[in-house]
Length: 274
Image 1 (cartoon, one colour):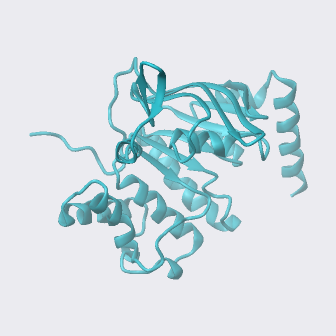
Image 2: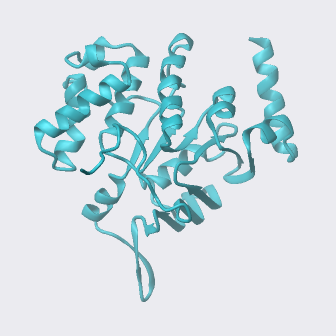
């Protein structure tokens, strides 16, 4: 009998294959050079948090990994397969929209704002991707959605509409919706920044559970303690570049680069003033 992974757990990849590889990635918006030659490998099952000041390129990096934004230069590989491009005799060319949609279906993303469909119930919000994109049978999509809502602690809200939920509950639905697509990789773009302080913990708890289960995660966050607790590696970005990266304890306790030191000192001062 084939063993089915629990809802939301990470697919298994060969240990030697980076699940994500960014090679020389640049992103420009007109004259604004946001990403400046990003090289980054993420192993299957690795949890990587990205920190840095506003405007440093963190969100743009995630949006390029998901190909919401097409890189201006460079390549991105998911499980060894080129994302959003195909190699030709002349270099690289964009793939067609259908191919890109199929590739992106393997990457889940949770945004700052919840982006739920207001006219759909919680259950319908979680079911719609598998039904419309993955073409799963309705009963299969519904069973999986119910399991995921149980996973994020919202089984009792399945028939509610988003406007009836708190911000933390809406964000947990957004996580369940992303997991319903059976992603190889989860991206979190400051998933708690739009929440009231008392609601942050319930979303971080779900993210920590996913991390403990082995989901590969790229997390842009201002929650430094969370990054230290759940990450295998923390990356500090500034001005569109990776300035420093390392094990969480090493980077937070003894940052080497002066820019990292200045940023973390400012974060500590802000905490002490609160």
